[in-house]
Amino acid sequence: MPLNTSSGQRALIAGIIILGILFTAFFGMRAFRAFRRFDGHRPAPPGNVEIVETDVGLIRDWMTIPFISQTYQVPPEVIFEALNISPRKDHDKSLKVLNEEYYPDQDGFVLNIVKETILAHQSPPIPDSVPTAVPPLTAPAP
Image 1 (cartoon, rainbow, N blue to C red):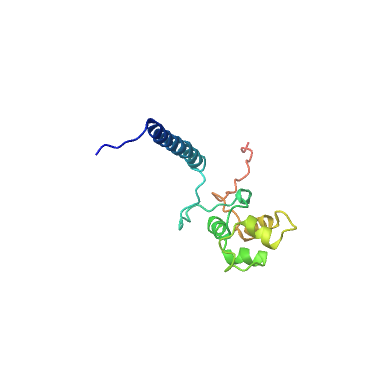
Image 2: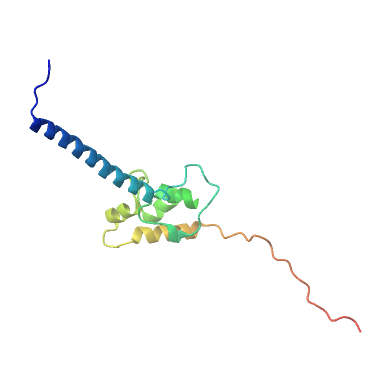
């Protein structure tokens, strides 16, 4: 039994299919560009404690306290205590969200307190080698 479709219906169906393909390609390219942009911004894998960060200037307000704690090897309880914030309820919130909730009048307060707390709890740097004393040069005997 042949289908009786008019040329207008065929054109409409073809137009919808072409529109769907264009829609998929457009948003697919946007997703691909976003993925490439964030490719190098991955957090450290859990349990990777080989590299301990020491530069607090790298801390950003999108980070969470557990992430910072793991990266800088400072217990999260120490950071939460410095901020006077409950670790149970605010465990997965970013520093920016914590600042907006607890210190809305003080822009960047949480970020600064976290940086100061990390600096206060970091161990002093270990020198690569211990300097040795070099005896002074003496004049040769006459």
